[in-house]
Image (tube, rainbow, N blue to C red; front, side, top):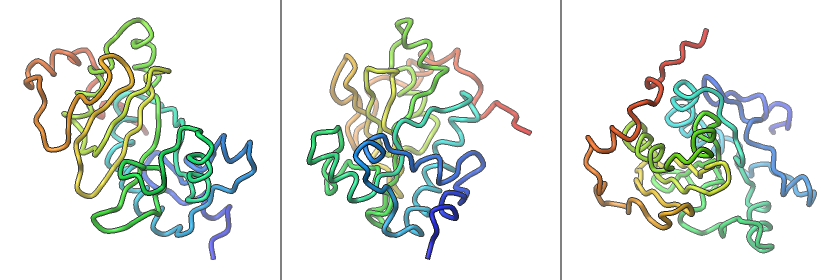
Length: 204
């Protein structure tokens, strides 16, 4: 039996703990608990998300702002039923229910903003610069970008889909599952030539 305090203390990676992903504005306002049915599965999938995707981002760009992390089955269903920007629980791209499945169907995702990039985006920088950087450096499965803060959903799967979409112009799919980028590597690299070195922050 997990206590809430014990669950929150579980370390997922060098930079993240379970507690970093449990807060939900929907859950807080509507008084719905946001706790996993299967803590061990949520932890296992969350560790993959953090070690493979979030830690490298943190060590490259500095602090990440987690906008939405884990959602329980009940909380996500409530959000979908009430049109609160939550996909159906069984939607293939729903990524916030970390304890939804294991094996090849496992998934863990989060919605985040990178303050370093948000500042540049608000001055007119193209969101695709960040999208292609992530594509070329990290084993992500899916990304969806949003106009506010250039926040985006980022998810991990054991077999990545490698798909990029956006609600920022140009809207729609930048990269479909199974397809190659429309921009050659050299062109993509020019987009992010001024980005910080990959994992270049030397934390103590």
